[in-house]
Image 1 (cartoon, rainbow, N blue to C red):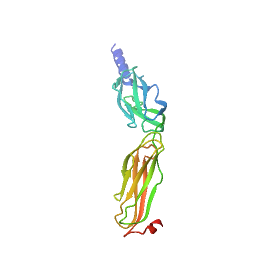
Image 2: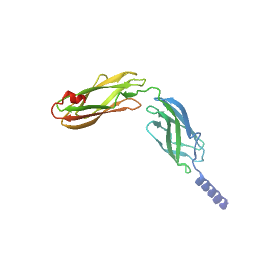
Image 3: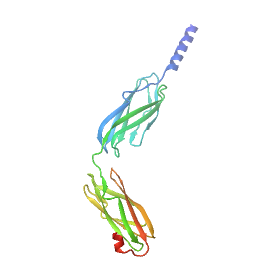
Image 4: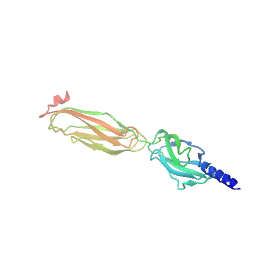
Length: 237
């Protein structure tokens, strides 16, 4: 009788040692198809603990801030099912996207499981900045002169284009006739040059917009500065 009790105890102990949690997902990769940029995509991953011991979800990490998930319940008994909701924020994306979610648990064979969401983001509405030229050459000028030039920037997109930020050197000043440019319209920027000293001058004017294609417009400004007043004939040459 004692031998039977000992044998039975050993069997139970061995079974206890072999009891493990097994994390199994119905799908580990979900394709959400095609969506327009800006849409919030909602996805649900279904899973089950198919092991014979309690499953403990320790941590969940996403590949970027555009993908969000949360799971309040962290312990799942043997045979218990659950759902992992995931949100993908498509704003700012275009084309094929692949995002991952990594889950750590007490599943000994698969302590780290990776889930994947994929799809195509279509950009339907956007602004496009097109500048008529990329260089302003004031040529030969005198230190005392204040030459200016007007450049046009077209919005070739289908939503409003906004002039968000302008940066340039102290020798250059800008004056825009508008900061919000409707689809198909132009903004004019007057660029005035204030030479400080003689010599060759070259700098870049940077205009940042909300355009999807080429959000940063760069315009080169250059001149050859001489002392005194330059004759108009020399300027024309």
